[in-house]
Image (cartoon, rainbow, N blue to C red; front, side):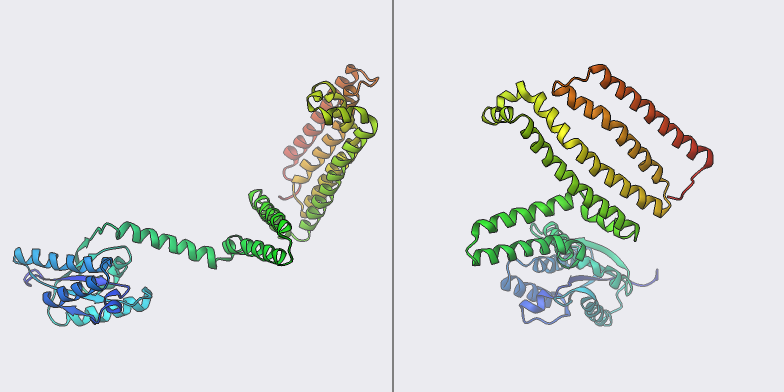
Length: 373
């Protein structure tokens, strides 16, 4: 190889086939005059075409190497509009045809973007790549690469089921509901429906509720216990919130009316309202939390998970907190119970909580994992 005279092929690659698509020129184009004529025709057909600049740049590179007395020739090859494998196969055939004309020792690739440079492996399999000349046309390289990235993401958003159901599916449901309601003369209801759908989607996706439900369902049949306890507990919890308002309104209707008419009076009557609200809602709210924790305990017990101990401690803690919360509500409403009784409940609950946590911790540490995770 050392004794062989150097002969370089300056090659401009139009991978998406714009030269053939926009002019009557057919590739491969070989020789300076033919290449200049092809570039001129492409520039006239589309003055904004970046491939025309890369072809002219190939001619400039050819002339500079000629001035350095390098044995050089220039050529242009084209792919097809879809790029990809078919384009690379066509480029390979055309480069082989050019290489058969002379004994070239290397190739100088002139490129105007990342897409054209994807043919490097194809060229390297035929001749060594001496150099790669990148043409930074003002609108070409950066914008083209940006469009390529955006195109990949757009295809992913449209065709990947993980994303298309949110990007296309949810807007589709919104437009469908809105269109039907508008046709029925319910434009106001259409606005409400859009807000509900968008709000529900943001809530579900933002808090990962869909993933949590999918994870629970994947743990069959244990996941159904969790789902039942969550739904049932949530319904009971909402009832408890409502019952607190009803109970407070039945006990102190006058105060409720005063605060409703003048919200600043809440600073005066706030303790009474909060106390009666807690007193009326506490039993139902605690029942809701107990349903959720018991469902979680049963699911972990069925799975054989060590988290059953955590759920058991939480249930004990929930029971121990009931009396202090109830005593606190009575204290706010000015009941007969004293602060000493409230503090006593808190201290007793703290002692029992410490004992329960210590018992569970020592048992798990001494005997090892009794149940698998």
